Length: 499
Ligand code: UD1
Ligand code: CA
Image (cartoon, rainbow, N blue to C red; front, side):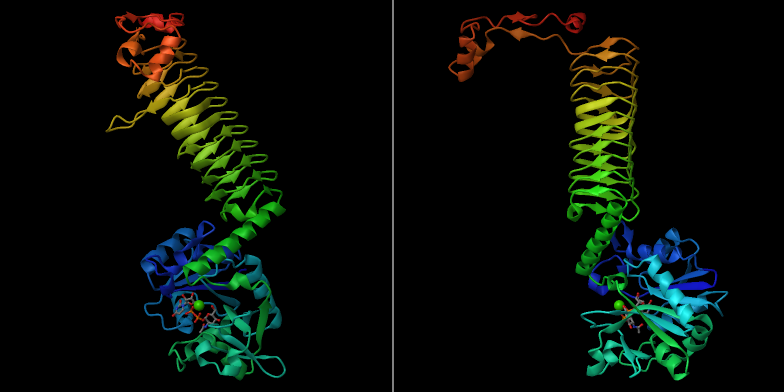
């Protein structure tokens, strides 16, 4: 809207939050409260967007500028009231509007939707009003400005809680705090608002009575969905609005074709993007800028922050951050994906596996009990159970590169920096300290020694010794003689190569 100016008020304190963080910077749905408001108003494409900051502005101002570099910041040094705040906003504009519409909103109403503001601005224009109020009918009007109407039903004034008579306090139609002004009227009235009231503040809401006195049109449009204009003043209200926002987001995704088995335990941030036919199982949190592609199944009990999940992938009981999972890949149960994890199509990161800065190619698998840090694993390679990519020498981090179609043994340690070639193998228990050429078998475990009769001589009289004796083991008095190749051993070429 090219003749629209929006003023967002965010200079007030928020003592009831009992927080070092300013009220408007508290988060629900992955965004700050003021972030939600700014997102909603920015979608109207206003010609000017002014945010009034004051209390803890050293924290609020940079946050606003980061999200909306085009927003003008107006500093209200002392919070003398909403009327004063709007005056400060207009003063901060080099090209303060003289025509068109000025919308005033609060920075702490995170459920506010663009469509609501658009419809309100249009109704204001249609009524040719000097000022319009977005009002609401609420069960408990305590604390709000009440909409006082005359016998004919026309709006006369807004009376604030502290200034209201008992009869006025009984009115349940309230000022949501969102007002629309004819720009010329606002420019004219803003300097005429005084502070002769119970709080000694400059009330923006006095502009309504003044317009009425001047014989101008004043309109009030009641919003049906009153929660959209609710603010959070303390942590309990923040939680209530957070759950409601989540309910709305989850409902929207279900309407768009996402299966959510348990909406009550599913949390989806405002910026998450889901494709149709995604399935989300109970206890799942999709946070930040997470994107999930078609037919993927996520959960149960999974938290993904800023992750990308490919088509048809399966992510079970996983905690992930800044990870990219390919189409058809499988993750978990009990996987920890740390930043820089990249799993290719049809790959696998299995049970009790932690990954960090690890590029695991298409079809490659790390199925069990492993740590993969600062690594590259080639296509089709299988990493044995219990493998540690030892990336940290105590001072620096180093990379491990495993080629394609390699098969590494169980309980290996890859001491980085090290390269394991394409099609290579490693024996069980290998500690890889030197590069392994393509196609080679690397072994480092020392040959096994069996001390025959050791249990009989060292654990005589125990259940263990009895079991050994019953199995025909050498008995007490035996020498503890060593044999390199006990029963079942000696048939492994890897073991022989080492001895
Ligand atoms: C205000 C309205 C009231 C309405 C209610 C809705 C006035 C006089 N009253 O009351 O009719 O029902 O909002 O929530 O406008 N702010 C500033 N600078 C200031 C004072 C306030 O930026 O000097 C900001 C606050 O940060 C807040 C908003 O303006 O975002 C509203 O201020 P608040 O003090 O909460 O007003 P209420 O008394 O709740
Ligand atoms: Ca308030």
